[in-house]
Image (cartoon, rainbow, N blue to C red; front, side):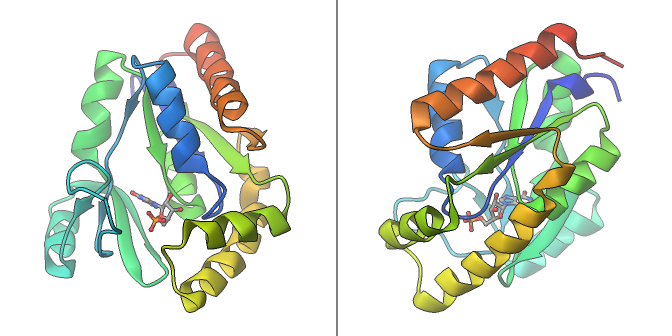
Length: 192
Ligand code: 5GP
């Protein structure tokens, strides 16, 4: 599809700080836009519908799926997460750089559907630091933390499939590394 070079997919294990990094990138470079995914998980404190996610019930999500309004979706730790077609295709056609922050399965699906997209994996400095960040967030139960740590190992194992890798040691530096990757692709990527 035309405009695939404008599509950027960012993944990284839970707790790696990818949302903070992407938020900094968007603040520094407002010409880049962020998509809002749909999910059936309950909002965390401070999260807003339509801003952090489109929070949906399971039947609502399944209805969107049956209408082909969700281009990729996965089940993650017991909840549905999915990318809405309306969030990406208009922007790609209009030549607006757009970022999806999604897990590895979704990233693989997006890359198969839109091979011109760029996939970027954000790594933590090491596993101990990842666990520390996850615990510091203070939003998850011990059971969820354990699930997310287990999943992190699998995800890091699959990071070899990504086009680009960035280690999040420091938010600003990591955000600017992402920006360099985006700039390069916009300048040199094929647009077909
Ligand atoms: P969280 O519950 O921490 O907000 O998100 C859990 C995981 O789901 C994260 O890795 C996040 O990037 C991923 N995720 C969020 N939205 C989507 C989506 O639309 N599709 C897929 N495949 N994963 C998503």
